[in-house]
Length: 469
Ligand code: ASP
Ligand code: MG
Image (cartoon, rainbow, N blue to C red; front, top):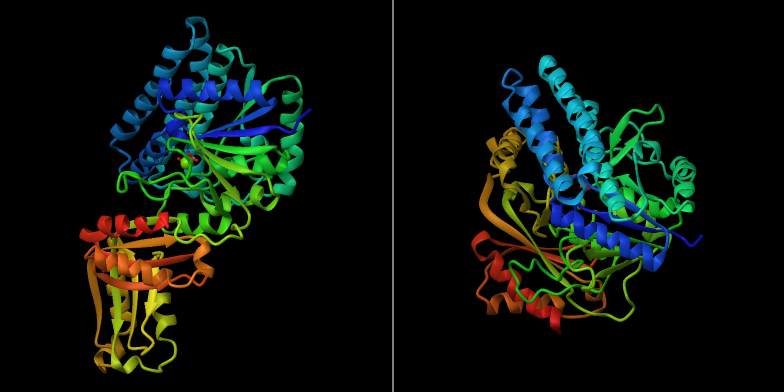
């Protein structure tokens, strides 16, 4: 048997009748052209969010059952619409039966959470896993109806994880024999397995999830465990783009990206793959492509382990909005060790992740960017951490600048190309954008800078102009 192809569909690729129809066609065609195919599916778009919101609401405001009742209805209706559009009447009841059972499980779980008035990470996973447990049987039924023999497979049978609920770490070694034992016999019979993304189980069989967006991870794990020919991640845009096309109309699909570049893009706000999720396939040299369900013959992006040898320069530009800058400033900080450590310990205690840090070499200020929503908490935390220094005037103040954005320029070729930073800042100057702060990643595949939120899109467009040279 040839090596299988893994096809993963994100939520928007299965979220409507039209989308699921497209996805089914992509599967049918891949099967004809390539041979054995393993499908991985996300929940229908919006379903995981609804499940989690209703769970939270049940824990916080349990006597008000409206959110969970609405969620149950909306989730069922979304699946029903697909079944009505894509399944012949005689197949609908059976397919929707699986969905109905999951909706019932959802009702019972959130009822229990409402009674308890609290929710554990383990319970969150029990609920969150239901989205994929509804979409996979439905997609399998749609494939069958279109003449592709298919069978839904629950990934709890395939993927063994630790017990870090909501962000479980998979054990590929323990999972591989399970994947092979369950999926290879299906493939040999010409049946296309439709595996629930996102889900795993502890060695005791308790359901876990791999973190938000975890279906990509499922696809990569299956790719590694089954020694796949390739892994194709289907989404609703033409691969990974050089910028957000809503900001930059002439943004282009990037034909190749290295693992490091993907990591920088993901970290700095591009809606691409999470680097940890693709590592299992990249490490094994299995090609991974990002493709568009709605434009299956359009351009795609191939992710490779190493950057190309020939230096390009700027490849892509990303934007993170909704940030503010926090400044810890004072002449008394000069040469005093531990200020940075105490600053970031205080920030870490608020469970905020810091997007970008710069320190002037004079050591008289530390500046960092954090999400706007965390700003007040962080300022309070720092004021209490440094109360003594502030009283002594060693630290003048904890400053806060609201309404900033971070723009990041990514491209592995920048490492070997002099003057990229100069060109970037010239382009910004020419566009009249004022740069508030700068940081260059030590990886040298990215330069980030802070701009006023109002100038952020101009900054992205100005720098994107450099991707052509
Ligand atoms: N359905 C899950 C989520 O929304 C997993 C995924 O779509 O990859 O996070
Ligand atoms: Mg996703």
